[in-house]
Each structure stands twice: as C-alpha cells, then as structure tokens.
Image (tube, rainbow, N blue to C red; front, side):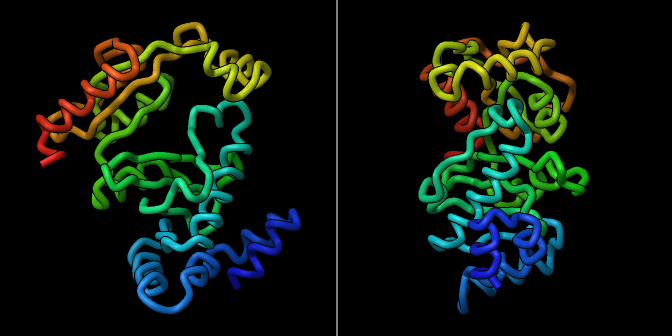
Length: 237
C-alpha cells in the first residue's frame, strides 16, 4: 500500500495517494516495532498517526508537509518545512488523510506544524499541540500573526522576539512570495511581524497576544533567553 501511494504521489495523482494514506502510514514502517507503534497510536488517536522513523517514512512525511505548505500560498512561508533527513530523530505525526502534520525534535521543539488549506480536519492545531504536550513538545517559534494567538491559547508563553528581517526573507523565498506574505499579514506590524520564541508554561494564562510579550533581541540573544526560561521551568533538567 505504501509503495502504491508513493508511486501515485510521484506521478502527480495526489488524490489517489491520499485515498491510501491511512494504510500507507502504517505500512511504510514494514514489520516490527515501527509498524506496531504506528498502529497502536492510530488506534488510540484516529485523527493523529505517528510516522515510523525510516528513510521512507521521512520522505513520506516531508511530502505531506510540503503539499500542505504549498496549498497555503504565501502564508505557507510562516512554516518551515525541511528536507526529509532533517527529520531524522524527530517524532513525526500526521493526519490519517495525509493533509496535515508536525514534528518534535529531541530537544522538545515543535516544528513544521502545517495543515492543507483544503483539509476537512477541524481543530488540527489544538489536537496537535495537545498531543505534542504528551510527546515532550515544549517550545516553538512563530511569526507574530494569528499564530501567536493560537499558540498562546494552547499555553505557550512568548519569552523573546526578533525583528522581521525582510532582506533575509526575500533572499530565502523570493520577492514575489514576500510581497504576498506581507500583504496577507498587513494588519500585523504593517506586514513585518516579529519572530516570537514561545515556551509551554503551566502557569501561563492564555490570551490574545499578537504584538505583546517577549523581550526584543537579536536572534542569538533571543534564543538564549528562551533557553534560560526553559531552564527555569525545568525542561532542561
């Protein structure tokens, strides 16, 4: 089943590939612990399925994220999707329909949380962040748009922020994409939202936070501030 889904996706027949996605997720691990773990998690949480840590699994997972990111147009630039091997050692979780996913690094960073624009799954971010809590996901970063409000409601507190680097952003994704991104986010600091580092804090009271919270700093200092707060909360013990 996994081979069929991969072939269909490679041939551009994404619809057929999605139709086999749930079974493919279980099949790519082959026999053994990877398959058993995926099946167990699928039974426990039918809306979120763990992807086995195999080369095929990482490739499959990255394809899910890339398709979802592309569907979002310029707003997809708010999420970083890496090459398959970058997910080695991370926990990888996706929706059974292969239209949303996220990963958690060994250090506890939640990355690549993205859902396809056409996904019918409701409340994916909330479900993902709740599941991520159980899997050790304790920090993340996001542009200071509606994302900080969303993550704030899930218990993530902004601790530091970095100013929008338009020049670097343009060099990474191109002028057209940046122009569209800034236009779509015009209500957030005139389309130049800060990058905010956030940590899960059990004592944090969720609230709307765009433009609020977090010490402004250069990138390295902002990351150090995050690490210090994680230490204070006992995440690095």
